[in-house]
Length: 618
Image (cartoon, rainbow, N blue to C red; front, side):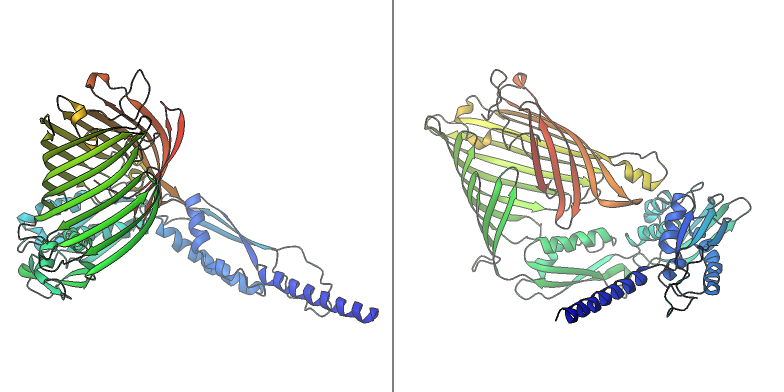
């Protein structure tokens, strides 16, 4: 038995060894490639040189390799031309390995001799071609239409490949695409390129650029044709879309109209398209809609550093029988808060204003205080792309219980309120420039034995300031990043602040205010000691530098951030004691909105805190 077992084991070992040898041979390369060149040239050749495809073919003969090297010379020349190097010096040589003795008698002596060969590619790219002149010609309606003068000038001003810039095929293609995109984005959806030429002058490494764009006819918005309206009327879709008949076609407004339809909750999807074959002066817009169900039940689970883990259940009834209003009832449970909210809203009218009524019942833990809230509202609101407004009457009742001594304080107030949000950002939800201003104004009276009038004001603003605007290179400008400034100020004006409902006063701290501190940890300061006691006056500010993360010369969806936050709450403005938080963070352009990850240090508490936040809200 022993000799048989030994023979079996030896045969198995030989089989495994042969298989391993064949696998290793399969992974061998016919030749290695070594490139000596500037970094941008080397990266281009390593990615796109046709010669790379033939490395795994270990059975290539010397004649076949020499033929490939001859082709590689022209291939490399063509690739360098795309970077603007039209007079390169390229030297390609093959270094052969020393002869390797073949010890296997059953293997031909002329195979496997390629392994160990090295192809050396030495490149001196020469001067990079630069743009000597640009001739950008706009033809068609835009050339003489006085209403398009600003758009015509914008195409010229925002041309991305200016005189003196380094020329490359990618930069040339991008410049043409950007210029055409500006025509297509407004008034001219049929704009097209009629000619382009890049005339290279190798003797002085310059290039003359010539581009002709035809704008075509200007288009104006006509009727909105709705497809898929079954549960909800076509007129309601038109009111949500808000496309004004007779206005110039603007692509961004079409996208915003499409977004308003999907955000309305009445439609699961919406697609708007312009009928180019229709009369340009009354162009038909076609809306293809997929309506949402009449009722919807949604369960949610989430977490944040401010509120901890949370679960929620939300029921939506899109058309309550008899009144056609939408009813949304939501229950939310989190670490410190239990909330039930019911909100009823009408469909938008011809003026785009909507009626709304709501009720909220909440139990909240703020520091050492338990706050029970009842709040009722009724009013009207409108939501637009850049300006939101609402006005409403509010009745609020709060019971604040200090747990340590079981002392409670119940306050009620009725008020008239106005709220607004004005946005001038270049894009949402990922703005890189622009500003926003919002506020709440309230006037009311405290209810109870001693009725007392009060007013309340809260204003907040945000500014995005791009850096590097003096730089000519668009990549360098984007890489410079931006500064983000935030500020908030509020005040409650009343003789006796203890009579005001708890939620009308101010606290601050947390993910979106002063990082480095817990949510609403910053209140009135007594003898320099931080407390969660709410106060009459609030002030916060923040300065943040956001900078894109670049990898392999390309922008990624990530950004780095460095910031300083500060904030204070007091019963007298002169008593402000500002608390400071400093930190670093990361931003990610996720599919559901901006993801903000921050690590901040609270100077007053001498503690580090991690902050997570998703979404852009203003």
